[in-house]
Image (cartoon, rainbow, N blue to C red; front, top):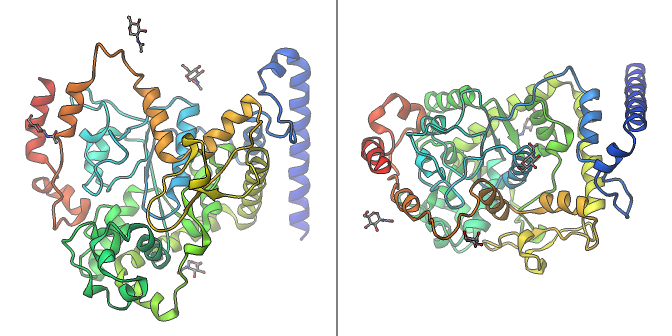
Length: 454
Ligand SMILES: *[C@@H]1O[C@H](CO)[C@@H](O)[C@H](O)[C@H]1NC(C)=O
Ligand SMILES: *[C@@H]1O[C@H](CO)[C@@H](O)[C@H](O)[C@H]1NC(C)=O
Ligand SMILES: *[C@@H]1O[C@H](CO)[C@@H](O)[C@H](O)[C@H]1NC(C)=O
Ligand SMILES: *[C@@H]1O[C@H](CO)[C@@H](O)[C@H](O)[C@H]1NC(C)=O
């Protein structure tokens, strides 16, 4: 108790010192400094400068560090990863970082990642990017071609049981196994009745995380194999976040990357209404665990390492930082959002912030207050911009539209032709990396080099 009180006092003093310093700065810099602040928000005037809070958060944190700005995010499905994408989009956008963007919206998922699917990339230019974060099936050798060696790799996992439920609702009309099953209970009861490994989009129906990480999601569970895969993931990914502990995850991310609080604050995006969430019985949970045993192993492992990381970070410190993050989010929600509650996509009239409605569940989004002053409107709009629209904005920024006279037709044609066949029985990139003959498109990638050069 005493220790806690003393720490709080410490923080209070630090905060007071920062306030005094900032006040002093404003006095010294006078009018020019005040001019550079965005206009105040009438509804409370708390939105202020985007980075003001960063400074406080940094001074309250540990020693000075250099923000890491080379980032690979493996965006897994149905894990809350759209919210992480918004964080990365905004960070890269504000700092004018270069994104490795897909030509459309995904890197030819479910095929393994292939560097030639990055818009504008050619092996001859050997260009490297700052951020790679759109949907892909992970494949390290190709990722390394476009990302610097000092990149920070991270991803996010969710409990495979609730993930399976979410996947069923979302991909019911896509996955062959889900399509055949009359409902979720029937599927859970006897998945093999509906599931044929080779049928269309069935990676959504079994061990989806394992698949997204690039491994064979239909492999029989064996202790040697699964521990080998987890070790391979651990060698590449410095941090694995958990959907169920989103805020703690964001704090760990902020710490690992030396980012500020405002760099990781976000509103929940691409989520469904509660009414579409199907509650599962205990036997159903057990069956889904067994059905997704590879994913369960992965999740169980990284759940353990996650809490080790929290412990190393300090539990009291974590509680404090999570509190700060939540307060900041609530403040931004109060300042930005109309009604403070999410609304159904169909009710959002502004197309630039309307989330994609897909699957059976109603996807929710946010409406902005109508009369935000320009500076706040800009910040708020970016926070509620769904991934597809934001990707288009970044694309337009990185590839400014050229005058019609010089069309980009030839580039598009060659890129659209580089489809990589999905190898049916890959052992994941861990094994593939050792077997160059199994690299996707290895042989014809040389042939394609020539074509691109010409
Ligand atoms: C980003 O680019 C814009 C437009 O060129 C420029 O005005 C802005 O200052 C840049 N921001 C940073 C952080 O470099
Ligand atoms: C994750 O780890 C925590 C802490 O050890 C534990 O309480 C929790 O039950 C674990 N979650 C699952 C789904 O195993
Ligand atoms: C294209 O170029 C012409 C002449 O250089 C110019 O008049 C026109 O405004 C340009 N169009 C666009 C969309 O930039
Ligand atoms: C690929 O290229 C060939 C010949 O260059 C062309 O006929 C074909 O339509 C292209 N396929 C796609 C998907 O663009």
